[in-house]
Image 1 (cartoon, one colour):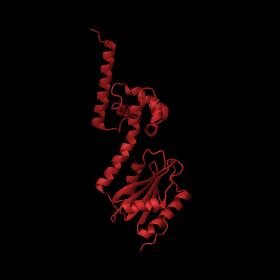
Image 2 (tube, rainbow, N blue to C red; image 1 turned 30 degrees about the horizontal axis):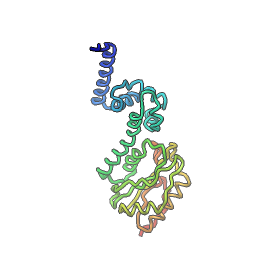
Image 3 (tube, rainbow, N blue to C red; image 1 turned 90 degrees about the horizontal axis):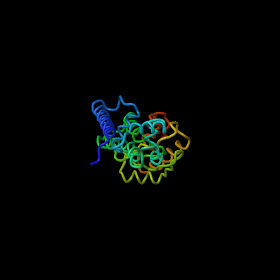
Image 4 (cartoon, one colour; image 1 turned 180 degrees about the horizontal axis):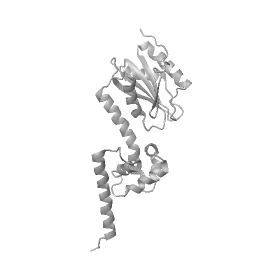
Length: 241
């Protein structure tokens, strides 16, 4: 009968004990007191159940520079980090998408009216979190400004997303919206509205006016920074019948 390697057995026990301690710490305290690499280490427990994920977490931080950069990295690049592989890379990149889905579900389930700037911001910032491409949403609202559906109109390059007024009108009619809020992100981190953003707002308002759907605002999200056309007094006048 083959003899068990005592060094390997000791290492396995220490490794398992460390995992248990980190899990228990999270269960009791949450993530607030964790270092960024410890958060990655904990997350990787579930993708790499038989590996020491501490050195892998450190390699990820060294390679990409920050927790958010790791989460936003291309899974192909993540998979090339020693110890990762395809399964763990896909697991890590799933986490921001899972967060966005949770935030959307919570907002839709609770039906919080999006009639206040802070409510709209609290909904949109997580929706845009971790996106490296530019995306454009039309939030379809009922007469009480409750969210009916967040319509993802287009996903573009980092520089530009292409939005067609006819497509927006069709979406708004399909979801029976009384009001809409326009929203897109600036992955560059600068929330300032461009001339193209201003023109697009005007074109979409003109397209929705004949069907009596009011555009309440257009918001640009850049990380935690938010620019509101309405708050800045930049919303074109819209004819209301």
